[in-house]
Image (spheres, one colour):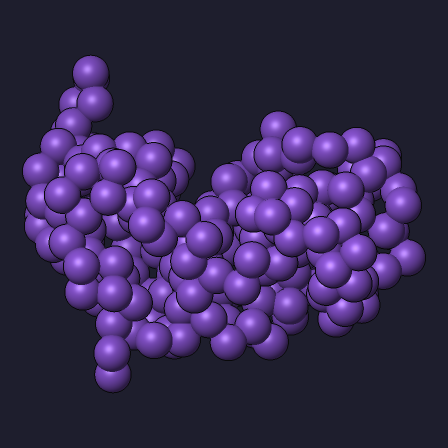
Length: 217
């Protein structure tokens, strides 16, 4: 199986302590990986390192077998990596759903008509076409998560990095998000503490602790 993303002995120490050390992980093509762990163990930090947003203290990331020597090296693959933060409320750049979803396409030079046409198809597939003209900040937490996800998927990334995609959502919204993620055939790394939901989605699960990173059998 070809790999989309590899972690090679990743370690990270912040100003207070070492969060984790020598983390190794291979994410195969269209493989869904879950990383579980207690709050504060460094799951979100590890995901940001994968996304090229934080430099590890040691070790390195490979994207499609290319070693990322520094954060600038990730720029070549920005459209291939879709990163969804835990709190999406500060993620939106435009007031309405349709404007926000097409923003990245427009920034890449796609005409407005073409961008809207592509967005309409995606919003229909995600079941939120009825929200097209709504203001994003009037939406429920679950709806905001799906809109933010649409903003990533519109660029057709090959890798999705999702930080607690079901956090702070009610059970119905959690199930809807997980159903959507299950239908998406992409390489995926999901940080979560919802073991009962994630086990039905992920091909493999790993647990991050202060002194270890191991596969959950």
